[in-house]
Length: 417
Image (tube, rainbow, N blue to C red; front, side):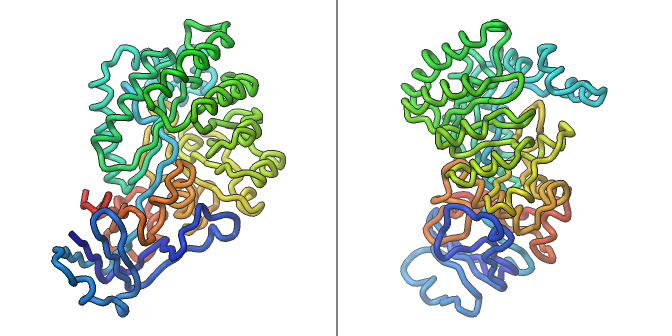
């Protein structure tokens, strides 16, 4: 089966030679073909180019059925890659939303048993089936918004049985949805209430029991730690990442959301695939990242929702770094998985160009979850994960029209979703 998309107004993020990421000044540039076609064969991209160069005879050669789609006036882009989410959770936290409106900080809510500990209690009470059903609905939601690859973390269980339960839900989502999904073990998301005052003992539990069991069932691709003020120290993080490395789990880090925590440096030390949040980042952190293979990842939805300072993205880009953006979809600090809105926040609050936010939510965020060879751009041989917009003036309109749903059709692994 072949699918041929014809008369595309703009085919965006095309690559003849796929790159692992886009950094610095190059983030302001995109491969764009005007009046283009895109050919899909099976689940892969088989060809693309200008309409005037389309060889219809070769497309129809052989016995394959060809489905033609006219995309006149429309854009085609690679699906979003959302490299940081917590979308397996039980129940919402809108009461804490009201607490925030009344002036309580993230840390104050956490100290009262809210925040992550609130979600942990709900996860422990929920069945695996209940968690799967709720997460499956969220997967449908984000796919409709144009997301084709997503990283999902545990971290709301905070005991061995509940963490494994969450990771098994993620494994089932991998098997039962067409999205490309990566799984991250985040047992070190917070110290559970039963270990209050005994943080080192909880870190020991993560290292000696949780990580070996996660690895034995092959439930995770990555290991993550919330290395920040009021959560896990650099020393805790070092121990956990070292243990994860021994079991083949590469690091991803929550770092520098609340303070200059040292999370960036310890992440780079362990060759983390990404360090995420980065509201607090200065010259030392930038210099460290420049010498690394670690992707700085900004979560605009969380900063927006929590009314936090914005990460200095312009400074990072001007220094020559790549930058990725992800939704941080979770019930407490970013209850949305709409990556188009994340692009809008990137433009409005971080002063990024439309081209930069597209790079940050496709090729760079694909790298941040380790799937840049499969998705993140329009390139021959990559998975046919892309979306077709409604008729729009051009790519600048996507972040500009920040509440409009501009996704007309979604294709995942070559099939219309």
